[in-house]
Amino acid sequence: MIRKPRVAVVFGGRSSEHAISCVTAGSVLAAIDPEQYDVVPIGIARDGRWVLESGETERLRIGAGDGADRMPSVDGERATVNLAPHVSSTDLILAEASRPPRSLGEVDVVFPLLHGPWGEDGTIQGMLEMAGVRYVGAGVLASAIGMDKAYMKVVLTAAGLPVMPSVVVTAREWSTDPQACRERSAELGYPLFVKPARGGSSIGISKVHDASGLDAALEEALAHDPKVLVEVCATGAREIECGVLQALDGTTETSVPAEIRITGDHEFYDFDAKYLPEEATELDVPAVLPAEVEARLRELSARAFEAIGCEGLARVDFFVFPDGSLVVNEINTMPGFTPLSMFPRMWAASGLDYRSLVDRLIRLALARGTGLR
Image (cartoon, rainbow, N blue to C red):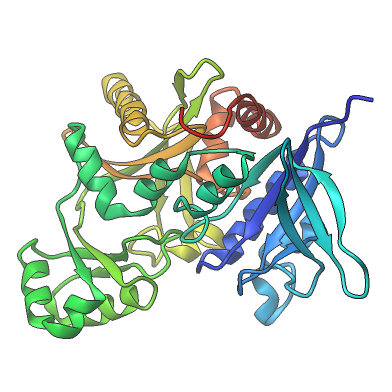
């Protein structure tokens, strides 16, 4: 018998975005067609253990429990799963208490729905390359560049793409010469954004209006990452995003852009505004833009995708200023797939529904080999 391709959906992880990864996984697991694929849900607990998860998508949504259970997480007490490379395949091995290890069968492709360090940054991609397992999304280098906002700016600038001015502050610099860090940051001019260089989901980000708030903002960002980006605030700019998808022939397609408009008490697109349904965030899909600005934005999205050597998918975020000029804010190599996420919304508005989007990414990964390419 010809078996269905086995897809291992990997989520959770050790980063501060563990819960958002779980939410994303819940949506993707519900979207994968069980008639087409054999799906294995694998959770990475906060301590790094790989476990065979239940795949109960309802448990993986925000607000599934009360109080401390509001944000979902991987159940680290479940049976452990390991990858076991063989000559011609890589199997999933399940280790349960009081039972000998047993194989769950060969894994054909991994869908790594991990956000942040130890997942979105090239680490799991490198492990899968070593194991010879196909996977969805960007490779090692592109994942690492996309995760590190400081190096992302270096690469995009070298490719002729506009970015916001910024400086890097490390934990060592802050501990040895904090005054120099303050002075370098102040030279950019206020207001500023202070953010973990290798974080996401707006965790650890602060908007700083003057020098009095800089120290606290740096301390907050350094609590999440020993490398911090201090960046000029794009005052007066609109926040516009664009999705990029790769085709089987290697060409890229871009979605219609979408706009995020922050209302209420939020100064910027913070964690609550992104993920909590009751928050007052307005999304325009598609964004209302002059035709020439939209065309330019989509062109720059594809160029950013190519500049970092991305594969599979990406979401490119822009600042659009009143005069129509564009600046790349960042590129996300594994954008969120939650019900509120912009990436699937943009592709739905472009004619590719959620289930078709997930299926396309899996098929693209199955058609792509591992190793140098």
